[in-house]
Length: 300
Image 1 (cartoon, rainbow, N blue to C red):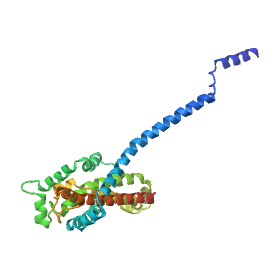
Image 2: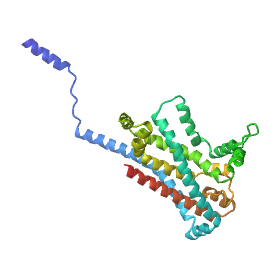
Image 3: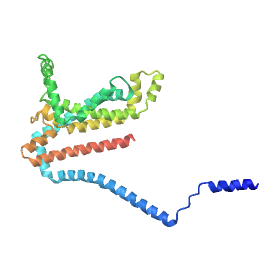
């Protein structure tokens, strides 16, 4: 019995010491140090992030304070600017619809299937996003006028279908679609990635074809993402400048959109009109962003 008691005592002596509770003063100092560290962390985040938000706010205020309702109204009375606004609304709407039409099948393929060359296609879709705008416009111009044994795409379209692209309205739409489709593909692909594909597989086991499962099961769930892609494509089309400048030109009352209107008004020294058109574009952009936010809340 004594031996067992000695073993117990020895084992207790060799056991690791229990941590002693911290004194109240030490615990208080730790809390103060942690609170100061957290405060410095949040101050750094708000300082860095808030400086950028403040910079954007100052940009918008500078635009708003650099013009007046009279200058804004006078700019809208110019027939060139009214025609530019109307052409912008038409081309952006058509470009957004075409971008969604092209992006929907491509985003679904990239999200749901695995095939040879998938990484190459995925990379090519991103090319318009990283190309400098002027390079994109120049590439479009070269494509339509590149000679192949005396054959040119621009000449063939004009002679066969009576369709002139370069320096005409179709060039505006094509330049907008080229870039807007890339944004729409990214938006829709993330949408399809969030949709569980098992629902489509269940529909197929119940007798639906692949097309029926896509149209009746997947597409209704992707509707908020489709609307978001449409809005993003529309906004991106409105902000297009470089490709339109090179590929479509800036002919007044013909190929002039709001982005090129700012360029032309500045070139003529009409700063008030340029600022008024810029403010109009800012207003349209903010309206689009608010619509996107409301769409996100509705989808949630």
